[in-house]
Length: 114
Length: 112
Image (cartoon, rainbow over all chains, first blue to last red; front, side):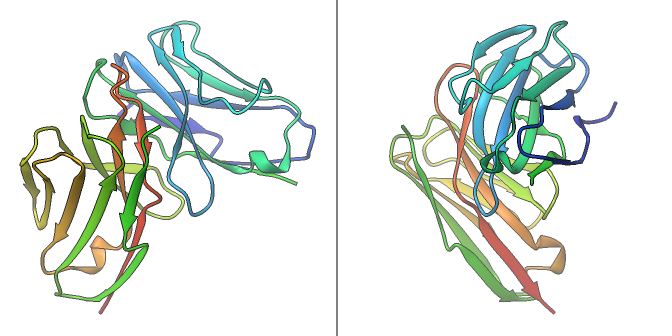
């Protein structure tokens, strides 16, 4: 595709439910990032993949959060036993290479936990 | 950890007026990114600055990184309604793979 695609765009989950958020990066992009953006805040880093390797997961807020990119392209962010504080927009970004380079963002998935 | 402070938090300007948004870092910036975000949308890349004193322009938007590399400004000339949105600065935390720390954003409204 032409850009980074995320699905679903919107997700409402009941507290305690598991959710899976999908990111289709730009084809051929090596780097993939997940960010969490709370209302009125800037995005906060969650995790980084270089191809299929998860090189940094220091931003994941708890062990309920898990991300994977098994074939080095599509990535899934999974949140288990969702809590109200998980409500946020989850943004995925990809970039062609590692190092200082432009990252292209998807439109995000807005998760609301009720 | 590196922190970015943006000012102002929000801004309302009349169409045609100039404006400046500032981004101040608590540490030396190794790469400074400006993004624009419309409500409910993803981030649109505007510019990246790396060298102290660097200045880049795109259409009516100019961004500068000061010599000491701890502050950047984004200047919009002759603002238009299409400029409205949230402007975010992001700093490369120098992790080697461009993980970004973001400011909280500046919301810009342009009145006709």
